[in-house]
Length: 54
Image 1 (cartoon, rainbow, N blue to C red):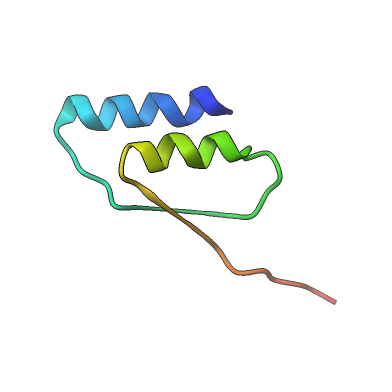
Image 2 (image 1 turned 90 degrees about the vertical axis):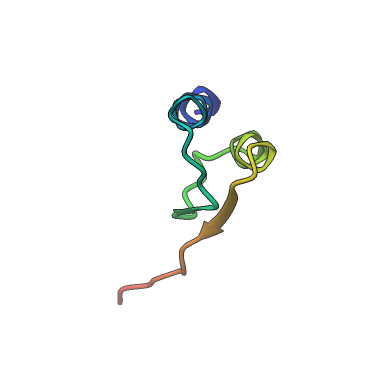
């Protein structure tokens, strides 16, 4: 999953694009390193709200 964070960050840098935010869900498949890689690139991770269905 961490490689999945590195690839788009490198692509964005190569294209000269600047991203400020990444909105993602709260799935446990995202390790802390995922957010750390994005933070190092200046991208703030915003987690979506929790939703429950009865």
